[in-house]
Image (cartoon, rainbow, N blue to C red; front, top):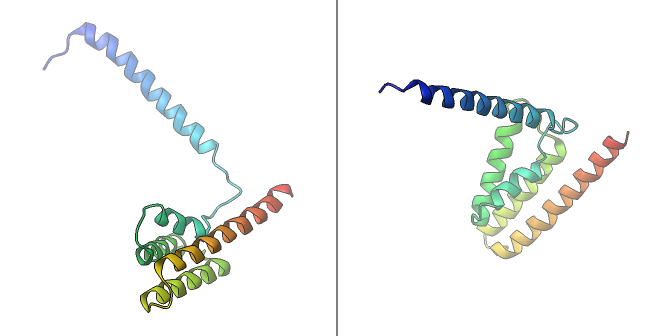
Amino acid sequence: MVFNSKFQLTVKPMLKKLILLLNVTILFACASQDITSQSQPTYEHYRACDLMSLDFISTMQCGKSTRNSYCLPDNKCSRKGNSLVAYYDQLAMAVQTNELSEIEARNLFLKRNNAAEAEYNEVMKKINAQ
């Protein structure tokens, strides 16, 4: 198909402007990222999986898998994160062995995950204040 010259004259400048706008947007997004926090906390991996409305065991497996995929390759898993994963593993095991119902385990998970987030925010506040 051959485009007429009028079409080329109107579309090419618009495409150039669109590409320029996209580049500026991408650069702005990269520049505005918070660089004080170089790692994603463990609780965020689990929260993201929980938002997918999976059953409790699947949420725990998803959280552990995404967290480990994130931090194990670069050996940047924290001790606190490891202990949080261990706690969540215990909750999942308690559900599987019927020691806890899914509702009880989810309530304990949410309570601990919120506490982990609050602790992380407090540490970041202190770091940013320095």
